Structures are given as structure tokens and as C-alpha cells.
Amino acid sequence: MKCGTLRQVRWKLLLAATLCVADAGNALWAHPFHVSLAEVEWNAQSGKLEVAVRVDPFDLERALQQRAGRTIHLEKEAEAQLDVLLGDWVADVFRIEGRDAAGGGRRVATKLEWVGHEQTTRFVWLYFELEFPCDVGAFEVTQAMFLDEVPQQVNTVTLRVGRWTGAVNCTAHRPTQSVAVPRVLRRPK
Image (cartoon, rainbow, N blue to C red; front, side, top):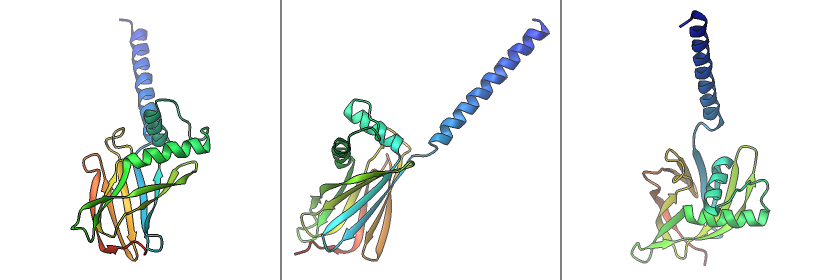
């Protein structure tokens, strides 16, 4: 093999390796981690849990596309149609079930009421309310957003009941977490 040819091969290999590393670096910088943050607050006047969830728009588009079986661009979808898609998707992946305070601790599901969404350049905020059919003393949070698509996804849920605050992390290994609140959440009479 000629010396010039060997240099060319080495140069091409070095260039290819550099491009691969640069491309991998760009992919990592584009979306280095997968997290969502949900803020859940008890509203004693309405008797509802008010929920705001911050998600990555790329992850959300991918999840909605998988669900709908078609291409979805958040900024191009009709607002009303997007809210229907979002509300249905959220109802499937985010749940809070309470323990009936008067009925021996039986499990009771919440009713989800979709409020809307807000999109910024970096995040999408999803807003909804959850209503228990009875007074509850503890509950279980299931936050399974993106867990099927991204195994390393971490969904943090912060909870606030009066002055008490708590937080849980839901992952692919533990999408449901139990929460013991300091007092019974009572529905308004």
C-alpha cells in the first residue's frame, strides 16, 4: 500500500469518526434527558385537585402521533381538535385514585375535567382538574406519560394540600406511587 493511500484512509476514518461524535453530541444536546413535572394542588373550595403538567413538546408530539396514527404538529393543529387529543391522552396516562375516608378505604377514581394547554418554545403546559366522588384520606398517583416510549423517563409529581407538600417520582419501574396526605380531603357540601 502506498504511503499517500494510507494517509487518505486514515484521514477519511478520522473525519468519519469526528462526524459521528459530533452528530451524537448534537442529539444529546437536543434532548439530553426526559422528565415531566406535574403540580397538583387541592382546592378546598371547589373540592378538586388542580393539575398543571409541564412536558417536552417533542415527546408530546411523538406520543400523540403514536396514539393518533398520523403526523401531528402542535403548532399546526386546530386548537379544539388538539385539546380533544390532549384530554383523551391525559385521561389514559395520568390518574389519581383516592381511598374512601368513610367507606373502609375502598379505591375511588377521579373524574378528569380538561381545562386546556399552553405552549411555549421550550415546554407545553397541560391543565386539568380531578374530582373525587367522596371524601378521601389517601391516594395513589399514576403518572405514565411517555413511559412506554422512553424507558428512562422520570415523571415528578409535586402535591400540595394546604400547607403540606409532598412529591413522588413515577418511572417505568414504578408508574404508580402511594401518597398519604395529613388530613382527609373533604368535598364541599
